[in-house]
Length: 432
Image (cartoon, rainbow, N blue to C red):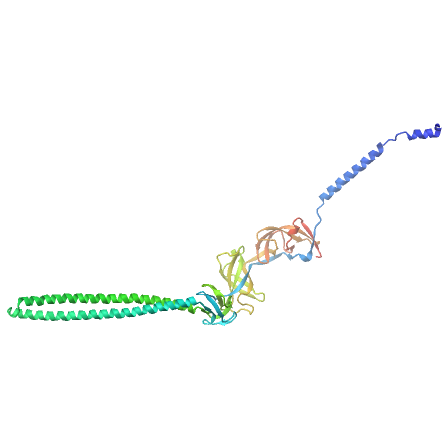
C-alpha cells in the first residue's frame, strides 16, 4: 500500500475534525419560541374580537316609528253575523223524510210546509187512541141513561110512598076526629092501626127520599169520573193527532229557510234538527274574543264590524259569562240599515274599542311582544345597522302597544320576529 502524500494527509486530518453544532440548535429553539408566542397572541386577539354582525334583508323585516300622542285600545276577534230572531225546527216525532218541499233560501210563511214525513206507528197509535175514546164516550152515554133510569124509578117510588103516606094520614085524621066526637064511632084498635100506618109510611117516605138523594149524588160523581176518563182519552187523541200532523213539518214563523240538512229517505229521530228559519231583517254580530283580552270589555262599548267589503259600527249589548274553547262570546247590536254585504252566517272580524289613552308613547305591536313585559327590540342606528335595546311595554291594542321605557318618539324599530338573532346585539340591514 502506498503511503499518502503530504497534501492528502493534511486534508484527511481536516476531514476527521468534528464540527461544533450548538449555534444551529439555539437558532431553531428561538424560531420555535417566536412561532409559539405569535400563535398565542393571535389566539388571544381572535378570542377578544366580537362576532361579526349577521346580515338581514331589509325588505323582509317590518319596521315602525315610535310615536307620542293618543292610542286607542282595541281588542279583536273573529265572528259571525246572525239574525236577532231565528227558529230551529226540530222533529216532534221520529219519521222518514218522504218529500222535501222547498230548498234553503226560499221565503216561507208560518204555515208553509217544508218537509213531509211518515211514521206508520204513530198512525196506529192515533187509531188506537180514537177507538178507546169512542168506547169511553159510549160508556158515558150508557152510564148517564142507566143512572137517569134508576133516578126516575126511585123518584116514582118516592111519589108512591108519599101518596100512601098522605092517604094513611087522612084516614087517621078522620078516625081521630070521629073518635074525638064519639069513641063509639071508631074502635080504638082501628085508630091505633091508622096511627101506626101513618108512622110506617112517614118512615118509608123518609128512607125513599134519602135513597133518591144518594142516587142523585152518586149519579153526578159517576158521570164526572167517566167524563174525566173521556177528557183524558180525548187529550191523548189530540196529542197523537198533533204528532201525526207534525209529520208535515211547517216553518212556524215567517222568514227565510236558511238551513235544511236532510235528504229524502233519511230517518230522523224525535228531537232531531230538521231546519232553521231566520228573519233577515235584523242582524247582530257574535264576536269571539280571546279570554286574555276580554276582561276589559263592557256593555255599551263601540265596536267596528269588518265584513271585508264594509265596516259597520255597533255596540256591545251582551257578554257571555262563560269561556268556551279559550274565547268569550259577545253580542254586538247593529243598525237596522245594513250594507248589502251583510247577510246571515257571514264571517266577520270585530274590533271593540275599550279605552282611549292620551299623551303616551307607543309603537306598532311587535310579533313577539306582550302587554306589561320587558322585551329586546332592534332599533335602527342610521348607519345600516340595528342594535338591540331593552324595552318595557305597557298597555296593548290590536295594532299598537304602549312603550314605557327604552325608546323615544322618532326611533325606528323592527317589529318582525327576530328570535333567530337572539345571540347577537347588532344586525346589519342589507338593501335598506
